[in-house]
Image 1 (cartoon, rainbow, N blue to C red):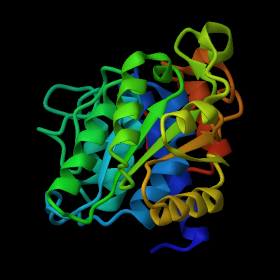
Image 2: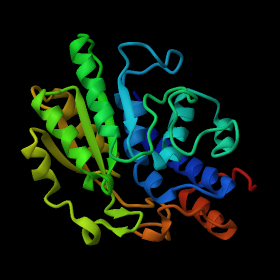
Image 3: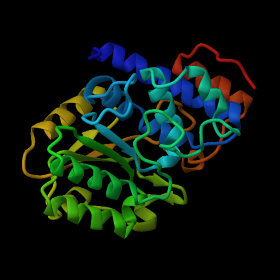
Length: 276
């Protein structure tokens, strides 16, 4: 289990990977990848029972990135955790390389193919129920976007999870408050989000989703919760760590140019990985 200092350093490294990966490919989703980085860092380097050398072991914890467009964050996390070589990140969105959205058939460590928003929480709920039926001790984590939480399937899955008291399920909302078309509150507000999850039978924890210490505390609390699933409302900043991307809706799905790349790498304190 990594120390708080090492976790912060890893999160910075992953952010550097995200910027470089998207810049070199010329496409991708930096905003939502940067907002979810701290959550993925804590899950994979502090919380989850996993073994990169045996990625399909039966009792492993499962993770579903429902907001599959944030795949650069997941891919970097998996690579840094040892599931595949770091060099594979250079093949993002290229033929015979890493898919634009996570693909469980092609990428070690990916537990569910995602990208069609709204479906990840259903898949995670199914995995959690299977764990109960098979009497296996694993936990299931899923990160959903706030924009996709406007979809009905999310709440059908929440109703099912609450009904079956899936206390091995933890749903984390990457609540950066910006979706592809603009600000969530203007398109279709989610408030009061926590109250909605409570109404579906969830324990609810609200945190700063870019504060690693808070994330650890919340996940430990979720583990200790019995008889109901947990929803963590993680208030995050879209584009976290890069000043000109932070809270800017235009950076949902745009790659930086050379000048912007240099600025981002400087702000993050990255060693240059080289340009395309």
